[in-house]
Image (cartoon, rainbow, N blue to C red; front, side, top):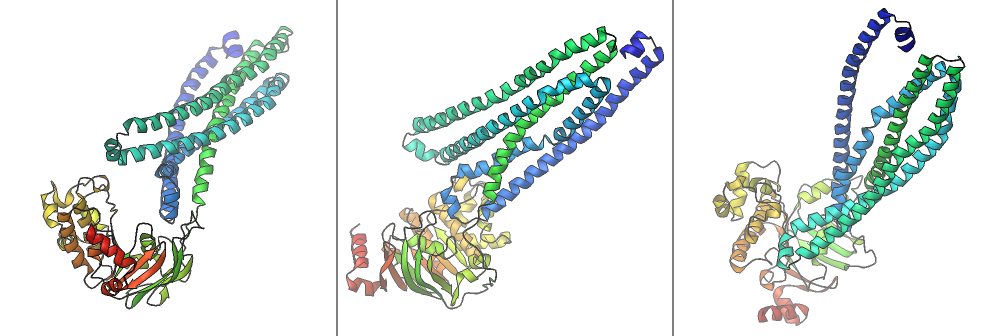
Length: 533
């Protein structure tokens, strides 16, 4: 432009340059739009696949992972870490484009003046050291930010779901203080990260200046001595200034990839978690339960406390279509025992058998299809009444759902809801009373039509009116089913066919209600104290 157009005043070349610039920008428009839009597609689809894979993997893990890890940690691993990976994916085009751009610019610079180009290379080793150090520090800080973010999620999740407890115990200031402290910790580590990121940019430019200074001097001497034209020198400086942008961009890439690398490490870590409940390679189906459930010298400790047995050689039999009650003080191991039946956890020693076959030899899905559980701690989704009941059997029709609600004595209160079966019941069913939530849980059990029923303190938290309504529904549900009952209220277990009394993880007594009273032992003491209250 300078030598051929400005100096020689060649108008034909001027016109050619004018059209060339417009053409280049037209090409730039189509190329940039196409590759950036395609990149967005790649990013969103990869993000989607990562989240799906993490979520599916977590759902497949055994229950102990969800007691060992906070909900905030799991949410952060599922949502926040893939977003950091997105930042790294967004660099794909730059990882390819910037080195190629730099390579072409270096080639053009060598063509113009190889001596000046070699001078520019002197700063490359120093830049490489800056990139490596910066990346290492940022990766470490990103891990800390992710860890603090999980605490954020935990505090938020606990605060919003436990808002009633916070208000009842006047914990607003206490909870806010916990949040403020984590917020301050986050701010401190974020500012350290920002300091490294913001220092790296001007540092790269400062180092580049150490190449620019000798270029100005040495290049100027070559023009003065006539060994280089003014246009060539101007072209070289333009090329050098264009080299700075890829270098600066690669510094940005280094920062973003450091964040992404930390997130990838965390993602790989969670994907390496293995469920402690493994399905047998030769698992068999369980289509129908016919004879009995046998607990044979069952010993169990929770995975995070392997040395602390909560069940010790527990043995008893649950005959087909009979009612067996488990009685004992809190911490005796009753709920732990029934959690072993659907294999939420596995026994350490002994076995649980259905019709003479160890439950570990059955398909997990088939095993759990045989069991319905109605517990004190009812979990309902923030969805419609219909969808919450349909959890009992996903392919059920609306007529089947309505029949289940009638059997659970729930139809009357459902019809009074604003939208009936289509009413959204809120997080954990908070828009319903305790008795109403319990009857929806019973409706689920009716809909599942499972032959084995577990009632875990199903009426313990209800008032007397709600308890009577729920008890009637439970009595209907128990008909023609094999039932395990856990209850502190002996009035609900005294009609059981067999009663097992647990104390500190061991069976101390078992028999019928009348036989146990005659023994004058632990059951008699429970019965006497319940009559006094």
